Length: 100
Image (cartoon, rainbow, N blue to C red):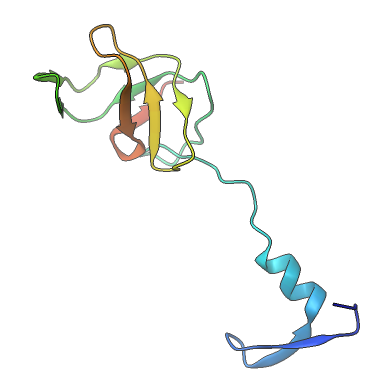
């Protein structure tokens, strides 16, 4: 679309420049956040904020357990990690807090 094209925005009920609507629709980088709202990155260490039963391992990870060297996934609600006794562990971000 050219810069002088206008598109009707149903959300606002107004005619807006096409370039403005395209800029608003462009997805920004997805930030993965922990339960406290801190931004997580690959290699961070996290602490569990709740006891979690691990499916298929017949084991419970206790609150306060430290998980080191996390890896981010395509899903912003999940992280890959390792524990001493559990390989291939996937945790939901709502149950972890970043260690300072």
